[in-house]
Length: 169
Image (cartoon, rainbow, N blue to C red; front, side):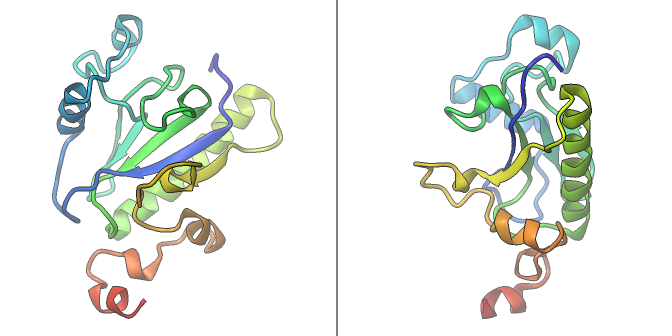
């Protein structure tokens, strides 16, 4: 990894919970917003994705799709892209147990990978998009601080199918 990574930023697609959208759908949305990837990085990874801003996308079944190359600056958190990696969950505020497991595993692997490659003893910090200054979105639809405080275990009010819990909180 040639660029310094200081943070991992969690996002959501703001689409109906549990409904499948593909990395190609996200790429199309990002093209419509004017995002572009460099030809060099497209040659290295996912040449068919012209605009995706995230490095990883987590599907409702827990599968993880790659977007941008880790060395490629993302387009997911204005002002923070150059020193961050972006992970996006498909959905808005409730995610499957498979997504929660994939998110935890992906974040842990990325933290270890970044520390190893950068020779750093401190992992990149993990934030929700809404945790960044001047961001007026609810993305990723849950408190990343609470998730981290819960040892990266799923938050009951945000597990798809736990609507009765969500109504109480």
